[in-house]
Image (cartoon, rainbow, N blue to C red; front, side, top):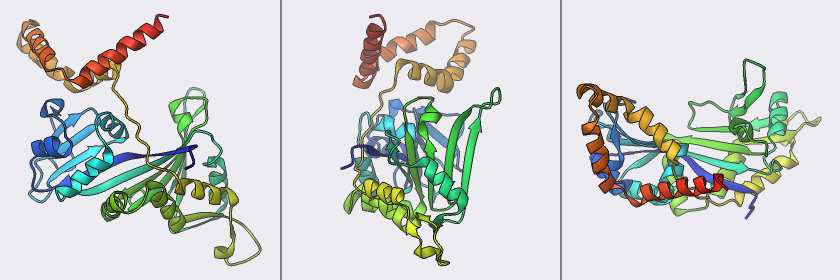
Length: 317
């Protein structure tokens, strides 16, 4: 296995019919209901939305819409702090649910395997053979000084069932060490097929490289008028070969105290303010709620506190 590359599931959406939202939370996600907060409005045609960090559960749509669950990239990492995404996908299948979107991300933190600048150069010159029809280069700058803070190459249409993007993750994160990411966004029936392949057939690297081989290759121009006979660029062949060997990586991320604080501020701050206004500024009832919450703390809450204490001690050294 090429240890210079890692691969993660970076987005997961699925729909389940025949279960209520609370059954999906308890039996499929394996979370407690207390971890989820009801938001004032739903989305995507669902009237109701519950969230737990970056995980959303949507319900109360039309009869044929079922319960829809969305784990964003951050949501996937949060889920991995207590569970396995492949096991989650297996439970989705057990309850006759279907995945409607799966994103796979391959990371190169050496800057030597995903040749981002070469891809842009070849794409701009048309030295590409692909089932996809278009490519888009996006450069994001700060207005104050023109500094580039984002650089992305998208291949294909965002509305298509399979879509590829490559970008400078280090630039996005504002770090100096190299980090390039290549993402496949796979939707609808293709996501359902991918769900089956990941669970029963082959490794994620083989899937990723297989899609790349089927959809695109960067080529060296020659005098041959038949572009399909142009030789594949060596750096692209090496990249696809490296991706083929990669295995799924688990990257659990525990929430920090500051992240929890920001989440409370954003999601339930207005609700707390409403209660305080109703009580005419008297904090007694709110303090009672907080005090009773102490007896409902779970292991993950204590782990966040423990991590915060460790960080505090390190900062004071």
